[in-house]
Every structure is written in structure tokens, then in C-alpha cells.
Image 1 (cartoon, one colour):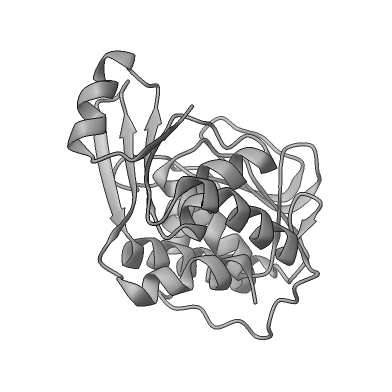
Image 2 (cartoon, one colour):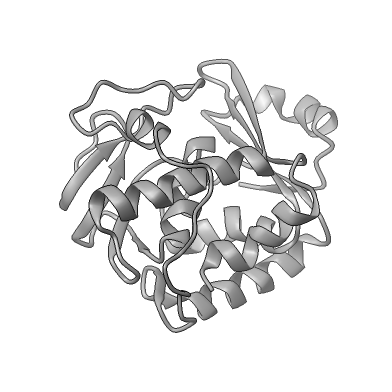
Length: 227
């Protein structure tokens, strides 16, 4: 099974309405919260888009060059659900998803707007507008093997094991406040996948205003902080 099926699907089945990610952008003064069910819809649309529009097959490299953001959660889980190997900017990819103004060494470069409401960017290949027409469910054509590459040089089994080890340090069902960017495999593991492995939820802050941290810890019932 894929990283998504192993780490995320059990959370979805247990409580689909529970928040998975709450994203603050202090520079834009926005707060967006997505439930597990809503994240699942974005992930399924992404997986269907990668497979059906761009012929992504298990093991193909998909570059996710986005900041730590609510939109990135659906992109990552969708890529893994489709069996893709998530890579950074230093690896040529079949498909790359970049922020506005971003570039990549890929056959297809799609722009994710990162708009608070998920609106499109108007780019020639517009991730937000393109995935919207795809289904909210995804059925893999074949199981993703545990030795398939999933994140950088790590396999599905290695990623899951590392996420579970990091998740144990967070405790059971943590509410994690993080300002850590997902700019490396280690950061993705510690700042995102560990939360899934621990059955928790994430409060991710972009352009953090340190003056708001104490109040936010209280209002969001934070149990752990990272970054």
C-alpha cells in the first residue's frame, strides 16, 4: 500500500470530520481549516489528475515544490496515493507542482495558486482549476509495493517506519503547532507525516508573527510545538 493508504486512511475512517490541518498565514492574516474528509477529496482529485491527465505511474518522480501550506497536504497525499516518488527541485520529474512564479525541471509544470479559497492562478497548467474536475475518490489500479520509492531516496516502508518513529515522540493524537518549512525529506517527515502517524492534527503557520504564538497555543489547544 501507499504512504497515503497506510498513514492517512485509518484517520479518515476513524473520524472524517476531525480537523487535519489548520493553516495560518500571518502576513495575509488568514486562517483555513481542513477536515480529514476535505483533505481526502483534494488528495483523491490530485491522484486522479496525476494518473489520468499526466500518466503518472508508480515510481514516477513528482516534484512538490510548495511551502508548508494546507494546499500542499492534498498534493503530497495525492502524489503518494498515485504511487509517485515525491522529490525536490534537484531531481528531474514527470510532473512538478510549483507556487506562482516557480519553475522546475519537469515534463509538466503546474502552478498551485495557494489562494486561501483554492482559486486558480491563471497559469497555462493550473493545478487548482485542473484537479477540480476530477473525482473525490481514487482507486489504485494496483497496490503500491513497500519497496517502491516514495520520498527522495526512501521507500514506502522506510518512510512509514520513520514517520511512526517520529510520531511516537509527539505522543498520542497531538495538536502540533509548526512553523517548519517542508523543504527537505526530513522536514516533511517531522513536520507532517509524524502527525499522521500519531493520529494528530497540525496547526501550520506561514510568515509567523511571534507575538501571536502564546495566544494561538491556547486557542488551538496546542500540545507540541515545532520550529
